[in-house]
Length: 161
Image (cartoon, rainbow, N blue to C red):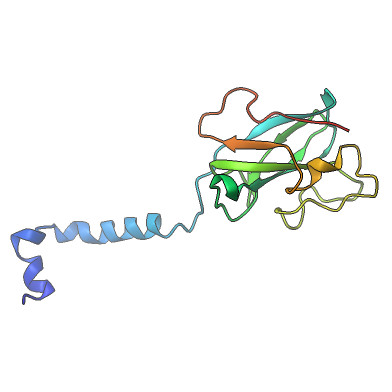
């Protein structure tokens, strides 16, 4: 049986040694996944009974039932004009896939993003301005698919009281 050094000099493994180090370095940087999944821009507008929702937090919870196995749920702060931009681990965008969406109205003193992005921040009794069904992944009727080339308005959301 031939050793590796014998095989590397044979014609079967004719590969320039000068390319070996850059190839290994390239595989190490791309194969380890240290930077996480690729993120795609997600911007939308949320309305409450047809009017702009003035403040709050929107959380995208990976929908495992639809094949989304992403580990962390992207989060976005809702601006005074009802618009939001999603970020994952502090970087703008979200990985591709289906998400259940929860919306929680901004409460005085509440941080812009929940401590655990997979769960909405606590709501006061009465549920705030919106129907409570939108505040939980188990009850929300909102869902979106993050895609590479979204249609205009694809990430717009409508909630009710």
